[in-house]
Image 1 (cartoon, rainbow, N blue to C red):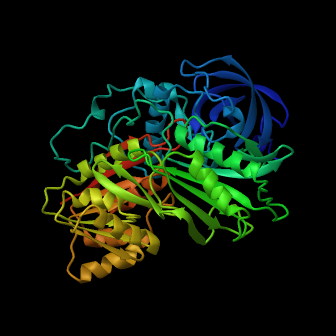
Image 2: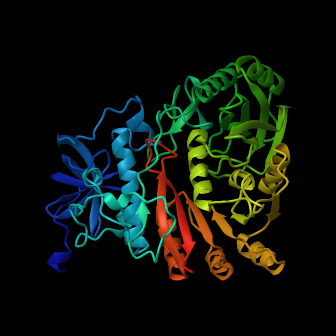
Image 3: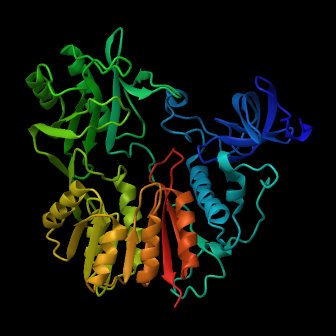
Length: 510
């Protein structure tokens, strides 16, 4: 065997690791004897002692044993179950450093995946946060220890909208964070199980499906915690058995709680392994008595041997089939299965940035691909001549039309289908978009849709993304097709996790 292919470390060896970056999963990335190791819980700038757990050809994984030199960005995680849960990955990093790291994640994706030029250089805070590294793409020969410094002056876009040829590079703005980055989630999805003491509900322990009981989550709104706690106690008092995924027996699989920040309305969804709920009237009365603001109690039936939360059948046990919430001055009806952003405070920031990039004067025709229940569509409709929304999920389009009526918006048209099929049909009908907004799932835009956009050639494309990697891939396609990627703004929708959303502005070159 070629000695150069043998890793200089081996499993169970204790090593000293100098951490220089973060992975997309929030792991510290460092080197021991020149070999790249991913160390959960370590931060850039730290020197740690770690135990090697797994070795691959170009990199490995190690368990943190001791922090020998701590980072200035390290802080004490306030959550008592932070290390066991895994729902958050960055509570041990100061919030300011999290925002810097997320911007750097976007920059790295644009440069490494999209092969796109980013204007200027990273700031000192960015360098301190380190590179963002993907384990699947690690190459120890090309990873650098630091980033070249610049003045940072190119990080600010001037107010004129002359983006030129794009040769100066893409402006990546600082991440828009929260003033109070706690208790921001309006939806809880809690798995249930059994222990000797009875019904438990909480979270899956890291790397397993063992359910650990939990009373509070610091990124959930307090109301959600209280509702889950009350439902758990009611279930225990009624002798309810939780679903066992090994045997397929038991009733209660999940409890889903949705809370309207602006309205105070609450929806409780009991996800059950079967149609029949014993003592269902007592369940309903108990929830109504214990939960202030409850407007809807639903049952979702899921009998499949799967880890997917929802099944295909949802019925109302009591109250309405929706609750309401508002983003800005737009009101939304939210059903048990409808998608609605989980951080309403930052959703308004995200959509505000999308609206700014759309630069609407009231004369434009706009297409919103992947429109969902019409959240962005209805924001745009207030400032455009007409907006067309398309979504593949029929129930979402029903909700979108209902939300349009709810707000008295008459200049929005919705269609069910694949965006790459519906949008060309609209074009044949003479509907030519001045602006197209896309907000795809994590896998990014369908390749046919990108081709459709290039054929349609709207003046502007506003790309809302929840995955910097697929954003970078798609921006490369659009840039090669004649668009300038002018600027990108990261938005922190999920503080203390590794996730970051972005809004990108593309302008047609001619």
